Image (cartoon, rainbow, N blue to C red; front, side, top):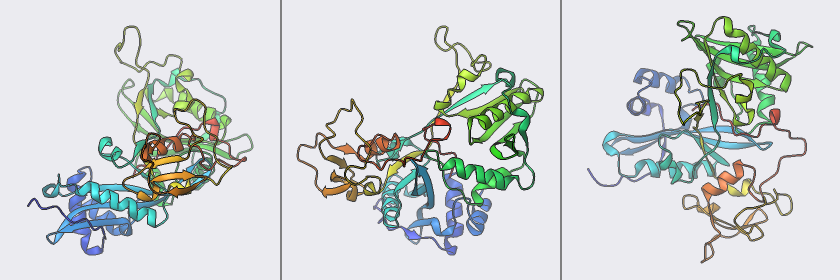
Length: 401
């Protein structure tokens, strides 16, 4: 069988559940088919069966994917975002371009339903880069002994969350999310990670008793040298809460030999460690030492360029030193979504065709990068009341779908 398969994404139904569960279990073996089947029937963390799509050929499912309906906080706005996940092609239908064509069709469907952005976690970045996606955001993973972190004031106001503590954490997250770049609006199901066995939630309360931060941790036992406490998530509304939570991590030296913490680059976390060298690491470059590992994951893409640009005179001013003449109209290349392609002026597309020279045209990936960095000339600016949480403008997407 070498004929190309016609791509027509179809909404999945209950009759498709067994075949989809088998396909995803084979493509992503970390979950058995029985669990995949149960999740599809009972509901997924980020959506349900209505978010699932299939491609059929010769009477059976040749591929499937999920298009979650998410809302992302970015530059003071809440943008409808499609979470693209579970892209899988049956082994005997691979290398025929089915996966790529499924993704392009999903992008079109998402744009038509009103999504402005698309986010995903790639199985291979090169594949999605060809579809206009770009990596954005990074985390610096530190492994350190708790005593290397100072016992900052406020550590004694961090307490185990009561039964109602999950609701308080949700409220904190909601307030923090609106002042960050990349965090999603969460549903109740999206908080299920807190309920996992061995996961613990601790709240920070300010001197007035108001909860202003939280930390979610999981531990792995062993000898004092090998035991590890992992910080799953840390949210703080202000510097006082942030330092108090870090101080609480330092206090855990009585039980844990190592702490694993994924910091945003803007935290400059190495400055908070007495000796920011990764334990048991070897010399890597002369007298240099290993301090942290860089983690990358999410990729993003603009689906509707018109929704991120502002009318004349209200957009972000062009940054100095850019290689292009930003006084000229913005020219964009987007072969997957032609609605974005062409010449843009004052937040509107004035011409669908690119100039014959094409020297100043940006790919949609380059446009997306500038937008996420807050440097896309003409993009809608944050309101005057928007202040980034803890002064951090880093992209952070913690939910994994």
